[in-house]
Structures are given as structure tokens and as C-alpha cells.
Length: 112
Length: 113
Image (cartoon, rainbow over all chains, first blue to last red; front, side, top):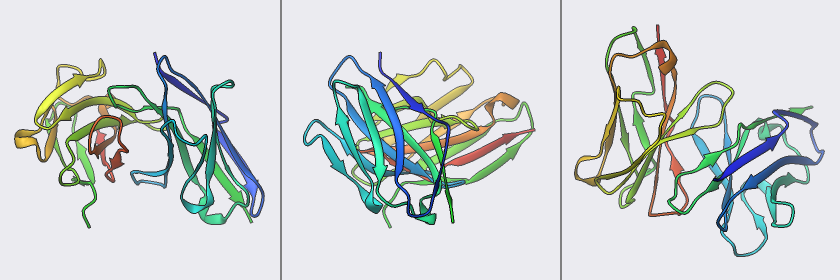
């Protein structure tokens, strides 16, 4: 069975600091992995996705994630946080049939 | 704009009433998904359609829930005899096929009093 664990329900960083949001997955098949961002009372917006091509995936708004099979991880990073990055971030894995299995989310706060 | 749209955005109802939500996917997308998101949790899969065929239903989808996608276009999700535990955000997503990127709508927030 597939599952996703996001370490840290809440992460706080200062503006300009590195953002690191952690995601570990479990999958019995080669995984497709996704990061989505959700702003309050809105739907989810895709940040980036991994589909077994390059292990370092670049997404929108300066975010990127690295697929590490040996560590079953897909952590999300951004070199310099901006106030507009404050939101909730969800990591998800897609089994073969296509529905997404989400982690519980990490709420990112950015301090001025 | 040809994104996923959902209607209504908010719904307040009394326990025991029936409610129906609508989702209009991105045109030409074959797959349509419904998810439910409660406070502090990630979205949980409910069901999905490939064109007009409902291919899978989660155990979360009790007998009070029914979903349709007539003609493979828009979809409706109906909840009968609502309970307070049904209060959640209901999200719809669509994709071209299989494991393609899913694009989400803004969601319908249901509050059951």
C-alpha cells in the first residue's frame, strides 16, 4: 500500500531563509510524487511532480524537490523564503490507478 | 479560463437534509476525482470517473453518498441525510488520464448544523 508521511505539521522560517519541508513515502510500485500548495479556503495548486525522469525536479515559485529512492524521500526546498510562500503544503503519491494519497500537510509560516 | 470549477463554494445545511455539489472539469479531461478534506488533514480520496464510468469508490464513501458523471462531462456528488461528520471541504480534480497531473477546483465547503 502507498502512504506519505510529512514530518512537522508546522514549520516557521524567517523571510530570506531556506525552506525545507520533509516528505517520506511508501510505495510498492515506482512512485509518481507530487507537491501541492494550498492557500486558505482555496483548492490545491501543483508545485511540482516527479515521474521517474530527473531526480531533481524544479517547480514553480522557485521550489524544487529531490527524489531519493534509497531514503524514500521527496523533500521540498526553496533557497530563500518569501512572505507569499506562507501556506499549507501537501506531499502526495500516486499509485498506478491514479488517485492521489496525501500526507497530512505542513503549514509554513514566514516571519518578516 | 478553463480550470476546474465547483458550485457552490459554500453550503450550510441542517442535519438530515440532502445536498448536491457540482464539478465542471477541464474540458477534454477524461478523469475526474472527488476528495474530502477535513480541518488539519490532507485530502482523502472518495471516488473517481474515467469518462462516465465510476471506476473506484473509497470506503469513506458511505451509502449516503452518490456520485455521477453523465456523458463524461460535469459530475455531481450528492450526500443524503447529512450528518455533522460530513462537514468538510469537498474537492474535485480532473486529469487527462491515469497518473497525469490532477488539477483541482476551489472546493465546496460544507457545514452541517
